Image (cartoon, rainbow, N blue to C red; front, side, top):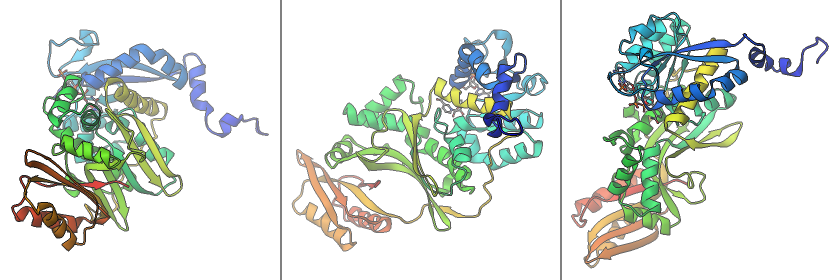
Length: 445
Ligand SMILES: NC(=O)c1ccc[n+]([C@@H]2O[C@H](COP(=O)([O-])OP(=O)(O)OC[C@H]3O[C@@H](n4cnc5c(N)ncnc54)[C@H](OP(=O)(O)O)[C@@H]3O)[C@@H](O)[C@H]2O)c1
């Protein structure tokens, strides 16, 4: 106690919340209306069912799921049928619902429903990175105008509390750089190609069988999902508006088993990375596969796990690692927003992407891994090396893998500029000496 009789907890502002939990009958209600009752929605139901009592004890928030909106009648549901509805207005118009949880996905009607819920005086929690990447500014403006909260912890990296870390834990920092593995499906596929020696197609099928990839995996394997998440992180961290067109984006579909094997022989593992880097007044944003040294912090991040490395000017480098998707990890992140809003309805994440920075893919320098598909012809490797040399690209490792006169030449370069690599590859391709498209991957140092 200090002289005024305040406890150390009170001085730190910590005891208000737990007191609510301790004094019987003082819990704050969080009455939830769910938009969607699929993977994440069902995870929420499970968490409420299993942990509501202990959550109430620890947080002082009493959870109650009032009802859930779905699209298709007749499916088995984890809630009693009278709580499952097909009419969204019955959620927006219910004064007994405090927080609307959007876990349906997609752009519309999700965006319209989020705006409608805010207009109806509800706070909203969403797990939907696609809608935030496309319409985040409008949605946050509506939250501001209506004085309501908008939680989006689950929209990036599922169970990893990266939004709270960036918006609160690291608020004292200017962030210079953020590098992560933001898509669990791509990471799982590349991991299976590496550990089980599968082809891309086999690894993708395994991901689908294990519920880690959609029937149409385009968003995951073409880097769109990671790009959505990078936009959310960028707008939050750098307060700068970004769009899909601002990003350089490459998927993982062109990676072949030979790339995985040769990268391994050279001391690297191939990872699907997303990078946001401040360069003076501009931001460099990219999503692409890259060779990562075994000893790099992202090197051991395997299977469907995600990780984000953040470099703050005060903290230095931090790394966040965990499950980036799945019913319960994602529902756990949704729940953290619900509890935060119920405890403190006037708190909120600062989302203010108003800084006018040049946002695009900027010319960068790095080492490169290059693969040239060839038919065995004498002098071909020399020709490739000569063109690279003409563009000032020097080679640290080179090897050829040929079978029955066909195969690939793999090269690792010293640090060089992206422009020079592109020009050299264009000249080699135009010379008509290759049997397919060359591949270039950056090496993340
Ligand atoms: N799954 C994950 O691991 C994960 C991780 C992080 C973030 N997220 C995000 O969380 C959100 C939900 O993902 P999910 O995997 O739970 O999706 P999901 O399993 O496909 O579930 C979607 C739910 O929304 C309902 N729904 C869809 N469109 C609707 C409409 N027009 N009207 C009414 N209901 C509609 C569906 O109804 P029916 O049941 O009748 O079809 C279903 O219950 C997405 O934004 C996703 O990106 C998911």
